[in-house]
Image 1: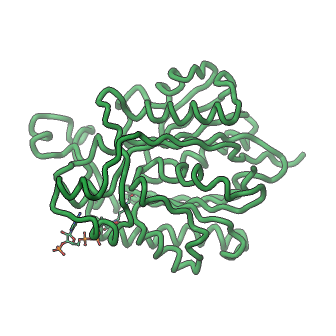
Image 2: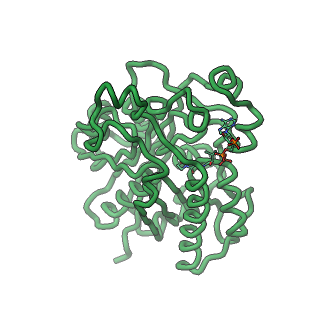
Image 3: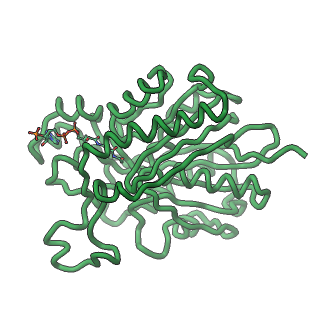
Length: 329
Ligand code: UT7
């Protein structure tokens, strides 16, 4: 019997309406459009401004769109994994809230927290449930309301992030479509350079943690930048070497969108043409768990069955990796 592989059979995204441009940011902090564009490639990002709506709202919209597009009945979802660093609550998990919102009554769900690699790690994890034959329909959704943990007085971070969600459907097939290989790593040395100090069991919330602005993203960008270039190049290189592929064999590399210069440096190190690297950071900024599915959503009409696609990410932790997929539709 042919091996079951887990293919991406649909993708959908949700981006909130409100836009925060570089010009808006010029009025909020000491920055300018030219600095932001040349240092990061970002021109604008979308924010979920409604205080009553959280990450699960955006994820729900993305998954509802995915269900409509693929014609999947929510009752046929077996598992939903939500990747997020901005869950609605510590508990219950966001995946369970999404299942409730969409009526996925026959599913189980959980969240994966791996910073900007959350979607990549979740997609590989979900694929294993399909490959094992245990489940038929697995939904992976990456969603983050980054505006809930961004300090809009800190120019070094507030220019970077946006809010969004993106979802994929994984289904089995015996034709060789889907996940071919993956390589993922973590290194806790990175915790020092990218983290949120407060709110967890190390520094539970108090007046003091709020006064000291400990509930916002802290990033020392320089070391993260270097590690991101090295990590994503290494991971994509692993996919090429282990599968005897050259850049010419790959239709698209789909990198986490943290900084256009990081993406360009990775492409250069791999001798990979930028025309075949998915980029939409200019419109959305860094949406953390949302970046990779949002790229797939935007570029899917440039893909056809059998195209080889490499997803790659790098994030806080550090967490990084890559996965190789045969596109199915
Ligand atoms: O997604 C998770 C992983 N995260 C990443 O991959 C992000 C990795 N890091 C980066 O993308 C970059 O390091 C940043 C975009 C965060 C920063 O870019 P950079 O080229 O590394 O700038 P820098 O931090 O070295 O700062 C250069 C200068 C500094 O001024 P001085 O000390 O040279 O006078 C900063 O204070 O730019 C200044 N600066 C700004 N100036 C205008 C920092 N932020 C701004 C700003 N506007 N928004």
